[in-house]
Image 1 (cartoon, rainbow, N blue to C red):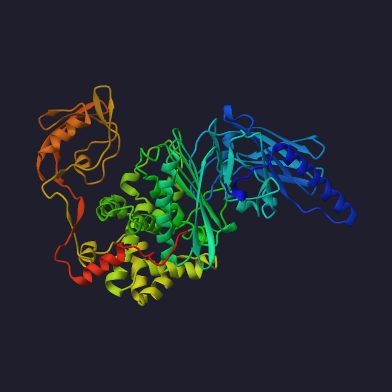
Image 2 (cartoon, rainbow, N blue to C red; image 1 turned 90 degrees about the horizontal axis):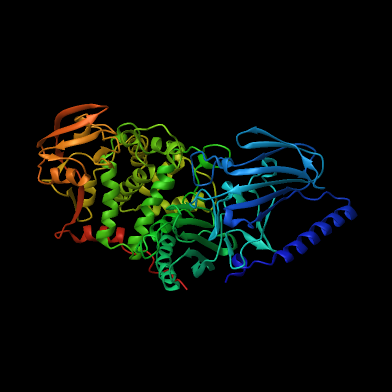
Length: 623
């Protein structure tokens, strides 16, 4: 058990310490005739976990008389869309230091105003929470999984003040895991930003840790694992984590200087939680509704992605996300780099660590590459433009339909493919690598914590490649526009052949279906220029017949297409808004690509491939 992260004094001790501290501070201030420093003190009361509720008290000290604004966040670090957390708070009240009620006036959907007439303002409210992921909170019999912006109100005027959190009435067997430090029974943050970036997992969890050396310092990497599996399964997960930690450290040359020399994975692998991951400065939240065994430890893929963020986005940070605004959407044109390059390295580190075999890793590469090459949305925007769409698509909620399948491509996937292409170009054309660019960005912008913009990134690409013209062309064509490099030629220089997987397989275009009784309906909009789209079929239409086969299930569609050839025309009958339409479905060649190892590869090509895929962490030691 780690003392800083795990110990929890009794509630009676908390009360004694709290009363003594407040009294001593007040007496000292009076004797010295000085003002008491402003602070923000929260109390989280978990007496009603069975009702999935918490009672929260926020005390603002040394308040100047006059109106004070109180806010519930509408945005959360690591998310870029709007999230109206205020919808889950209720029974909101305000008091002065003597418990006299104060009037609270709601001034907008997520802001209130209270007029201070004493040095302290106390705000109490209740929270309902039942969505465990990287953005929201969940409170139930099993745990209190708390994302801070979704849980705690705040006063913008006190954003620079230190924050103290006490936790009372938690079940006795529950422990607290957090990147926050613990002092005298309270969890402490330097200021509002630090607090908002520090999620909590309060539960009966398995605690795992190992020590990783970096530049003469020993860092403790922790896993607070809340799951229903065995301790041995947790230990196996730890070995997978240790391996990718070494590989990621090798890319940058060192670990970030984590606060308290600790980094913590807050992992919930339980029924009724959402699959997600969310980075934070010295910790990450990773959630999945599958057990480790059910997923065959695939959760490590999210863990690898989020851990890479400790460098890329938490410290190598875009100017457009700094400072983070908790009251509105936060738009950036650099998410292709912040998220997409992280996606690339999360997987590459797992190949280098031995988690992915070469074939399994190539499947990951091809999944992203095929999706990107086939995405109609690339006609409209490059990676920079797609990044700006995050304010709508990053777990944002809307009820009206969109056509994202035809006009949008995820900056995660797009950025991953851009990273792949850039890495291969640097290796083939310049004898350099993307690893070197990442390390350069770390040294100049991450360690120094100087936010960067696209021009800064372009300059460092020019420095690493030694070719300013290449860097400028890359940004003009492959970032601001939607061009991609010649992947076939690049892979060939690594002794790999990129080719059509099944040349004789017919393709109608990827669509989703759903059954409505005995009828089969299209559940997604067909991609532009696909066979389905050219036949005029739309979302919600009912398929009646394809070729010689009556259609009532998705298996019927697969059967009708099974023996068809590219270029073949099948009779299609479907119903659209009450009208039965008969037309032709003209099939094309399946565009799916595959990678084949060239057995005649030269020694130089093999070396390039090995330098790309093999472990870089030979000299690092894990204790």
